[in-house]
Image (cartoon, rainbow, N blue to C red):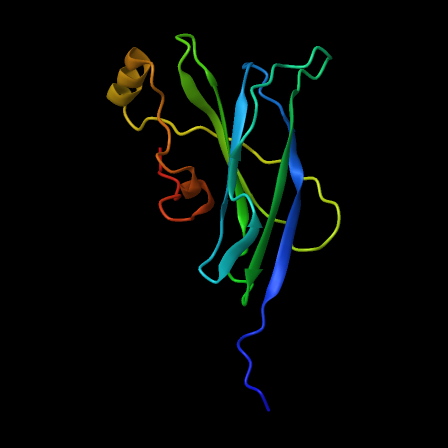
Length: 161
């Protein structure tokens, strides 16, 4: 009887970041990356990517359409740490600097088939009035050095106001 290693399963992700609604902004681009547990490993495809810059559509919904393809395959021995996709959206501010317009994350669907996900986006806020003034004055809004923190739970507790 041959002793085999642990059995693995594959997760294939094939889809696209279709569009976004940012009514107050235009000329935005999107970056994606995946966050996954230690038992997971990508076997094919791209772990991260960046889209083209898109302008608002001229119809009533003013959508920003990317149709940005995603194709990756993971292998794992354990479903713990199921992959999440993290999206970061950037665009120019009034000074022409690229600033973050939103972060969001969602788990890759657990069941096979076609899925459509709407990802709520947020931007970090300065914690003090001095930081808010400094970021406004310097033209640099707060942003994460590593967008993958969006998919992690540490430090996400709400502070009483």
